[in-house]
Image (cartoon, rainbow over all chains, first blue to last red; front, side, top):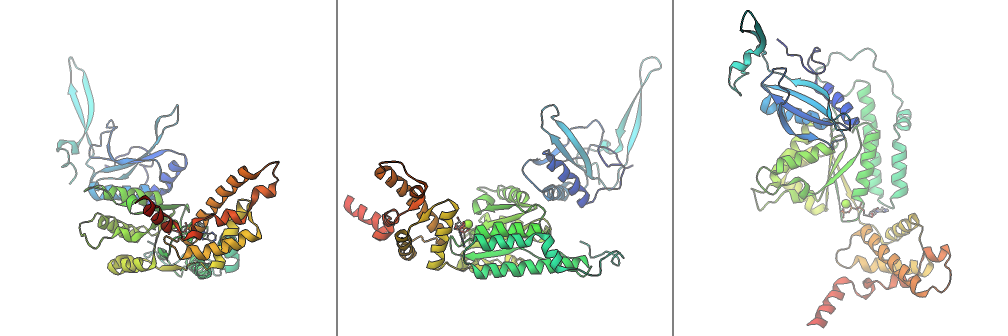
Length: 139
Length: 314
Ligand SMILES: Nc1ncnc2c1ncn2[C@@H]1O[C@H](COP(=O)(O)OP(=O)(O)OP(=O)(O)O)[C@@H](O)[C@H]1O
Ligand SMILES: [Mg+2]
C-alpha cells in the first residue's frame, strides 16, 4: 500500500529533477530545506530523524538532491522526505513536505479494534511494519 | 542522463543560427568586460574565447540532438600570484551562467582549510558543505596542491580529494571546479593525482605581466578610483615596477594594488602637511613623484630594511 503523506504523494514518485525543481522553489522563497528519514510510517509520527542540518545557505537545489542521495545510501530502505521550513514571523512552520524515497514494499496498516466498557470500541491503525523492531522493519 | 532516450522527438529544430545564439546568450558582454577590465593576458583571453565558442557549438549540437552528454568543464588556472586568476574565474562563472552550463553563476573561493578538517570524521562534512554551497556555480580552489601531502598518506586532504573527484564526476551538471595555483606545483599535483588530471578538460596558463602592462594596470586601478599620476609620478612608477619585480614576494598586479594603496596614504599625509588654503579636485586626485619615491622599494626593499633594522638593534 503506497503511503500518502505531504505533497505529491498521489502522483508517481518524484524524479531527482522533480525534487530539485520543488526544492528550488522553497530556496527561492527563503525557506530552510531539510532531509529527514524514518521507518515508522504512522501519520502521527511527525518528528522524523534529521539527515544533517537544515540547509540555509545553498543557493542551488542540487545541494538538496545531493543530500537526498547521500541519505539514500544509508537509508534507502526507509521513507525519506524533504521539508521546507519558513522561519518568517507568523509562520514559523513547515511550508512544504514531500516523500522522496520509500521502502520497496509497504505492507500498509491494520485496523485495531479495542473493546472498551459497555459495548464501546476504540479504533486505531498500526503499520504492519511496526511489529518488527526499529531497523528491521523494511527488508 | 538522456542516453537511453528513444529516437529524437520530431520537434527538434533542423537549423541553428550561431550568430543569433551568440547575441542572445549575452556572452559578448562578458567577453567585452573581460577585454576592457583586464589589461594584457592575451593568451588567457584567447583561450576563454575558444572555450566560449566550443560551448556555444556544443549547446547547438545538443539542441539538434547530435550530442547528449554535458561536456567536462572543470578547469585549471596556473600562474604566479596576482596574475588575475581569481578575477578571471569570476568572469568564467558569469560566462558559464550566460551559456546555461551553471544555473546560478556564483563563485565560491576556497583553500585547503575550508575543505580539510582537523580530526577524523571532520573532513567529509566540511568538503560536502562547500560543494553544496558551490552547486549551481563555480568552485574555485586556490593553491589546490595543498590538498595533497605526499609525505603523509594519512593526511585528511586525501579524503577531501576523493569526495571532490566523486562530485566532479557525478555532478557535472551541478557545478564546475577550477583548480588554481603556481604552474610547477600544479604539475606535480596532477602527476601524483591522475584522477584530477583526467577530469580537467581546460588548462589555462596565466603569464606574468610585463613592466608596461603593470604600468597600464596601475593607471587603470587609479582611474577607477578617480586618481591620476602626474608625469614625474608615472616615470617613478615605471622605475618602481622594475625594481619591485626583482624583490621578494613580488605578486604582479597585487603588488601594484598594494603599492598604490600606500601611495594614496602618503599623498593624504602630504596634503595635510602642505596645504595652506583650499584644495581643488585636481590636487586631491593627483599622485606626485614623492608619493611614489618614498617607497622602501627604492631603498632596496622591505627585507633590506628589516635586515638593517635588525643590525642596528644588535
Ligand atoms: N590584467 C589585469 N588588469 C587589471 N587589474 C588586474 C589584472 N590582473 C589582476 N588585476 C588586479 O590585481 C589584483 C589581483 O588579482 P587576482 O586576485 O585575480 O590574482 P590571482 O592570480 O588570483 O592571485 P593569487 O594567486 O595570489 O590569488 C586584483 O585586485 C585584480 O583586480
Ligand atoms: Mg586569487
